[in-house]
Image (cartoon, rainbow, N blue to C red):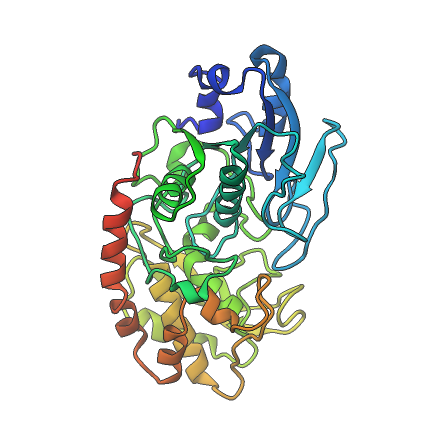
Length: 393
């Protein structure tokens, strides 16, 4: 079984060295658990006396500390944690970055949040902004590492272009980065000028080619529409449909695996995608009816993506082919979603998701989606070189 940074921290001597006498803040969410399903906040509170620390504040990213909010721009407010009696601050609302006041009673800020390996997932950007606050205020920042559930080998997508930076992509990394949160923290700190006092607590037993199921760790939803590791595997592609009027499966039991729209011909979509010979996946025609979100109560035709071989599956390329095909079926019905999206009110959401307007323009021009994906190769190779010095496993 893989041991996460949370479990290693209190067994390695790091906790004694880093936390004795310290006021500690935790950035956590529902998936911040140990192998016994005990939440990190309870782990720290339970060992406070033993290690001479004082847990003074909790901080929650998008969807909250306990997973209490749904998707984009549904904000939550701070409160007093009823069990621990300490402030619980929102980092997804009026501010996305810890303020001086929030950190006034914190000496050491600890980040222990399960990521899903995709740029368009706000938790790593909460981490980057919190690191920036700690750098400004001279406070220590500790990352307790966790697995990348979609592996640490492959990289996919062009790195984000700086002019398209947003809360779903603040720094120039690809859609699928193949790094853990601790590795990202090291890279953000060194390559992008954050420069905080950073401490990393590595995992034990994790290999870059592992699926999440192979880690032996329990899966807890890191966000309400990330119910299984299967969801995480398709998410780097399925998320692009958030930038369209096509349903990405929210309101069903298989979000991001199910994609469709009322005008779509499910059989033609599945046959066309399977005929492309996309590696590692098969596409099954299906009909579904979302219970909330886009097309709530309407019957949608579409496909479910079944990942047959995660090692070779390229989720972004596969979703781009699906996007191209579903748009081609009815250009008059298809539409790009309009702003706002993740606190951005000017640029199209699809451009923020791709980190560029190039892909959208290529699709509109009728360029073959596999040729578009091939154009990402130089950027992917450059990112492989950049990340290499920061890999821990």
